[in-house]
Image 1 (tube, rainbow, N blue to C red):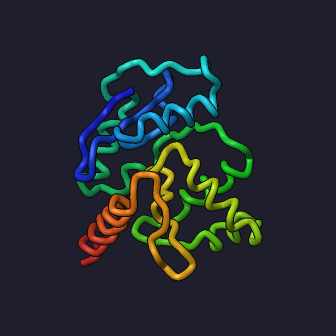
Image 2: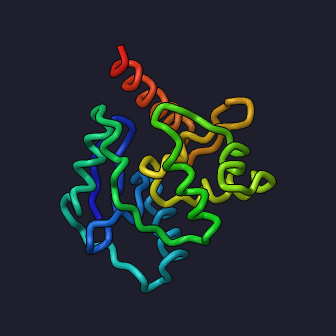
Length: 170
């Protein structure tokens, strides 16, 4: 477990012993993160030992926040979850940086067009936000809807990605 400062708060980064990303959350939501870890791995199924830049993940997250958005694309992520959740999370990784899609669009992309509400629940249970970009999912009308880190962080992440993308194509 490592922590790093970002422009929008301190980030907690959890990796396994092989350096695969297991969880990312904001420091003030560390309790929620631990609860998710218990749900996925069991009460004794994990240990949170301090580590400096485990698997290079902390530095990669800093690189993303400094403007190299593609730095997170190749990160090795290993998460537990139901097959449905993992399908949703895989679809989230296919959303281009700086773009947004609706929950219903994600449901269509995984071949379950009627599962909009379940997609929202899976999106909310995502243990590796930012890397599995749940912040890129918006309401059907384009409105910013729930984000575990708060709507202001969601707005900042989307603005950050759009701003960097515009600058790189200018």
